Image 1 (cartoon, rainbow, N blue to C red):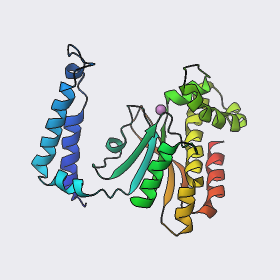
Image 2: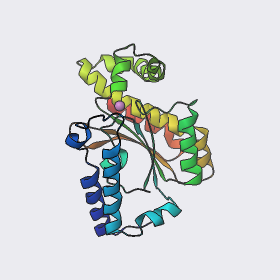
Image 3: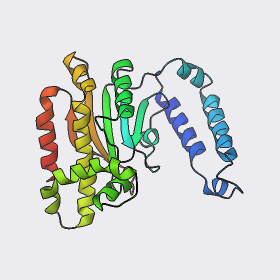
Image 4: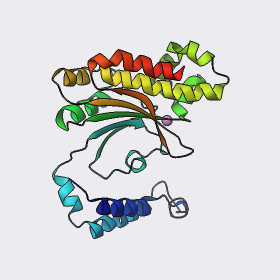
Length: 246
Ligand code: CO
């Protein structure tokens, strides 16, 4: 699907206007936990707004999706993937989990990756972390939160692998920020090492894996300078990104 810039701008502004969370209507409801009427009402307004601008929008989109990007991000509610990069429905395939991890035994994430690469033929996989990540902080502080501690052991692995680099920083806030960055770089490496991505590159499929980090305080994405488009780039790209963090 190809949108004119006018139609895109109108639809994005319409989406922003209709999907902004309104605490007065969402939180003051008598039994908000059970009652989804505010969300349903906002959904009707959102759908009507889009149809007013593009009457065929949903019918066209229902027939197929052709996203160019797979986004692997944190589940944090403050980083809504499509919104912060201004993409429309149908343009971003998304997987999110706590601390944006790519674990080689996580069949959920691997299934998303396989479908995105092999069926949808996305051209970019973006791993996006964020500063102030609660999952990364919990790992950093070795908090005991229950089941999730086991998931966050993967972040602790990153922390232990880069202990010397982190130890050189002045204070824990800087270490935490750097750990958020290192975690993204490590997950870019994990994506690139999967059989799915390795096989795609081996058969000549165009596919780039990127690492970004999002600032909750300014709403901006930063490029962590790691972009891997081929098996042969992997080692040097990883080493370069880690060196830039040192
Ligand atoms: Co997070």
